Amino acid sequence: MANLRDVRLRMRAIEQTLQVTSAMNLISTSKLRKGRRILEDTEPFFLRIQKAMLDIYEGAGRVESRFLGRNGTGSLPPERKNGRTAILAVTSDKGLAGGYNANIFREVAGLCESVTAEKKSPILILIGTIGYRYFIHSPYLILENFSFQSKLPQMDNAREIADFIISQYLWGMFDEVHIVYTHMYSTVKLLPARRQIIPLDARKMQEELSASGGEKRVELQFEYVPSKEEVFDALVPLYVKGIIYGCLVEAYASEQSARMTAMDEASKSAEEILEGLHLSYNRARQAGITQGVTEIVSGSAALSG
Image 1 (cartoon, rainbow, N blue to C red):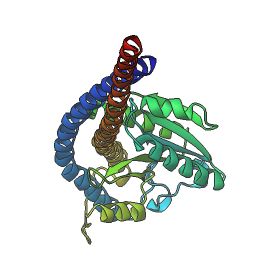
Image 2: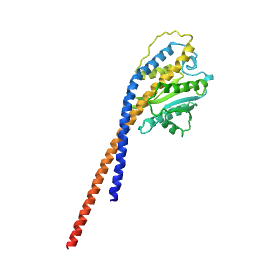
Image 3: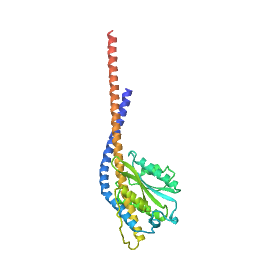
Image 4: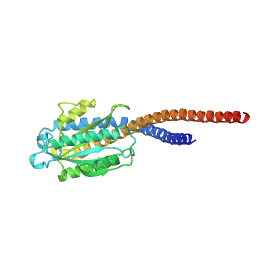
C-alpha cells in the first residue's frame, strides 16, 4: 500500500506539471504569433533604416563627428578613447525558455573576453531580469539594467535605452557600444547575434546589411544642411533607437519561440513519465490484488483442512 501511495503522489505531481507546461505552451504560442506579426512588420523598417544610414554615411566623405570617429572610419581619435566598451545584452525577464538565455550568456562572455584581450574594460548594460541575475556574479561592471516584464517591446522602450546609451556615450563613459541579441532565422533556428551600434563603421554596417539580405545603393550624392556634422548628430540617435527597437522585437519573438519549444518538449517528457508511472501503478495494484486473493485462498484451505 505504501508503494501504491508513493506512485499516486508522483502521478499527481507529474499531472500538475503537465498542466503547467501545456498552459505555458499555449501562452507562448499565442505570444509568438503576435510577435512574428510585429517582427514581419518591423523587418522592412529595420533593413531600410540600416540601408539609408549606410548610404548617407558613405556619401558624406570626410566627417568629424562624435558618432563617426576620425575620418568616418568607425574608430575614435586618441583623445576620445577611454578604453571602455559597452555591451548591451538582451535577455528575458522569465526563465523556462530552453537555451535562449544561456546562448546569450556565452556570446556576451566571449565578447567580454575579446574586449579584455584588446586591453579594454567591458561594461554591461542589461535588458532582462535573467541576465541581471546571471551577470551580477560576474567580474564585469553592470552600468544599468532595464526590465519590461516580458511585454511586447514598444518604441518608448527603445527610446529609453537609446537615450541612456547616447547620453553616457557623449559624457565619455565608454567609447563604443555593441548589442547582443537573439536572431530568429526560423522557429527552430535561434542564434545569438552581435552588432556594433556606435561609433558607426561602414564596413561592419555593410556586412550586417548583406547578411540580412539587403544591398546598398552606390554613387549617391547628398546635400547636408546646415552641415554634415549637425546632420549626423541629429540622425545617429534616431538610427540607434531604430536598431535597438528592431533587436528588441526580434529577441522577443525568439524568446517566445524558444519557450514554446521548451514547453512542448517538457510536456512530451511529462507524458512519457506519466505513462510509465501508470504502468508501474497498475502492476503494483495487480500484484496487491493477486497477493490478497492468494491469502484468502490459503486461509480458506487452512480452515477447511
